[in-house]
Image 1 (spheres, rainbow, N blue to C red):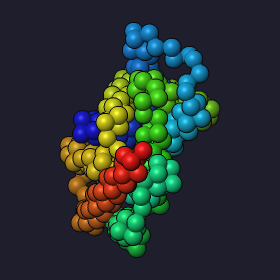
Image 2: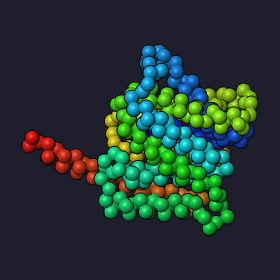
Image 3: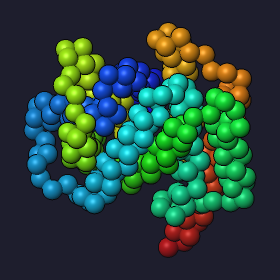
Image 4: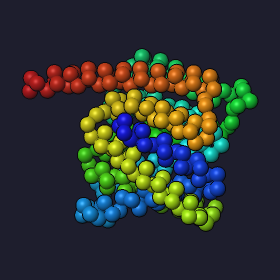
Length: 288
């Protein structure tokens, strides 16, 4: 998970640079096209029957849809906003995971988690700075991306062990290509060599990072892995400074700290509740 989170910010940097010359719809399509392009040789080499109907096709399609929406809205946010600011809002995903997991994954939810979620959304308001001149409505795209990414995380956990990680990644890319192709064509700009190379690099980074994330979910729960998402912001801030000469202001850093703190607390509390729930289940099963 740490390796995956270290690689993801490079994807964002490529996307932001490409969005200066190409429409967001096309950049998003490019990300998924080259994502599939890099995976296909590996799938053929491993002789995986990718053309067969996957197990739980509905979940596979829904997972791909959530990843596509998260990517599209996040790319729209970073087109006109600094990556660390948008990424801070994307980090509401662990809070959303903790809120929805009881209904989808059967995990417990209590008042402590509820308080943590509320505090986290206060951090969102601080990052947005709605009463300042620095506020841009386009930052709200990152909030939508955070919700979509949370659903992607939850569905990924439900799909764990039901398909090879490479195949799961490929299905997500195919869904993204299918959804984004008509949208990209409507605003297509013919790319030059630089655009093609950066698009290829973006797809490679996307495939590699998400493969690591899927492998992580084979060994730990969504709540246990959520805290490691925050390592992404460290690399993102470093890259934003090196590439775009950007340093977050005080309010953005304060909001980020609030969101990370609440997210860590919520994830810890959810993990603790899950452990208690597992012990209760064992206590019921043992006498039988």
